[in-house]
Amino acid sequence: MTVTDKILNEWSYRCHDGVVDINDPIKLSILEEIYTEIGLLEINVDDLENISKEEDKDIPSRFETLYELVTLLKSQYKLSNDNFKISSANELRVLLPKDFPQNRKDFMSDVLQNIPNTKFEEGSIGARSSLGNLKFKDKVRLVVKSLDVQGEKSAGKSNEAFIINDLNKLIDGQPTDIDIVAENKTLSFPNIIEVIDASQSDTTKYAKADLQLVSEDNKVYNISLKQDDAIRWESSILRYRDWFNKFIQKAKNGELGAVGLKEVPGTGGKKYKLWNIKDDKVIGRVIVKGLPEEDIDEIIFGSDNSIVVVRTFQPSDIKKEGDKIIIKASKIYENPEQIRGTNDEPILALGNHIRKPLGIELRVFTKWSLYRDEKPIGSNVEIDFNDV
Image (cartoon, rainbow, N blue to C red):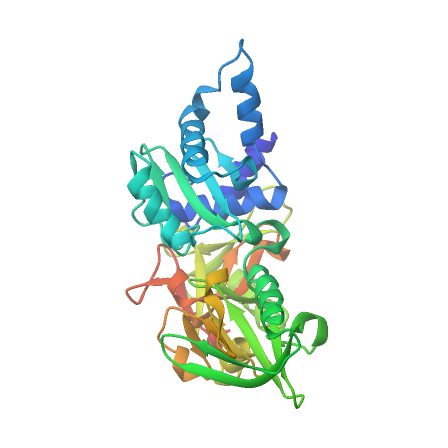
């Protein structure tokens, strides 16, 4: 089996209906996850430029439109090759440096105005970016990210890294009041003298804090950072190991209604797919309703009672006004009632993932990634926690 065959098989396995589709942004995001896991990158901008400089070679035809877009962006915005990442011939990522004069949203608006034949890609919000993506000549997808949120510092870790660094620079060892200002509320933290990485200081089981604000009188405020339009809250296999084992057994025995398991051929009974017995088709995710209230509280706020601050932070979100530091956030959550019914509400679900034990993963996802208009997306089905 070739590498391409393996990628296609894995991609098909993770798609809710088992069908790969390059025109479906959700399915393409799954393919991107697979590329990231195996470290696959077909070509980079340096390669394209080297090819274009050789008199006896032309840029491969499938990359012509992408390279045209790269050239336009480099000319218009003074970007270097390090600011681009090629996911495929039809997808380009622009990685904006931390000191770039525009945030992602403003940059995208500027591109729409100044780069011809560029438009917003309908239905793309959340698939790769909370802001959605652009399309150039109806062929190349343009995904705008921040340079410091790629690679090992991706997703939530990028939030932590520059926030901790920037806040400590602004505090400069002097007791400083910090306000976190969100759409739904403002929180004030007086006389903060240091911001520390909670992952290095708190190893409590199920602790959620990413950073801690430490005051002059040694009071510690635990802060959990979550990006806008995040998809997951946590991996829950350790929290619900016994429940998971019972689910597998009952699904094998056909005791969960339409929800069953189908053995993956060639795995010797070691891997399974979630399977709709009634309709005889693959299940995307099995949504588990009715989690215990005490579990929901800990899933959101952790055993360390963290405050949840939602934001895909940009450097411009943190600034000093007089003697006070202002942090701009999207939302702040301090209790479960504030999050219930929102897109961020935590929902337990099982999904197909061939690299996981038995081929099944168990995670807590955000509501928006599982539902649309209060109805399960695609082939997702619902069961009750207490039915297992």
